[in-house]
Length: 115
Image (cartoon, rainbow, N blue to C red; front, side, top):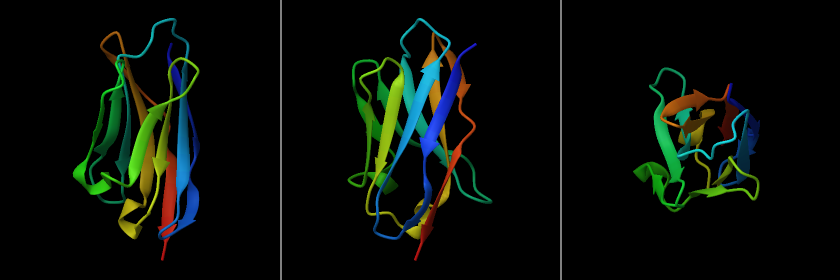
């Protein structure tokens, strides 16, 4: 069973930065795609950023230029660097990994941006 462990987040001031980390365990296979989603209160979960096995990245327009997704040195680890944070970035952030066409989710980590 693949498990995703997230860390990071917390309370951050507007304009500040933080980094989220996600590590997948329980699989010998490299993830085909790893991504970060977020869900704000009362809103639908949305894809924030993704990175494929070849390193191709994609971002939702609202975070382009402010967030960076990148892989760690350990297999199946991914980070999300969040900078220039805004109040609208407040949400629970979820790690997602697709391994052999099966999607797995972390439990989420809360990022709260204060004015």
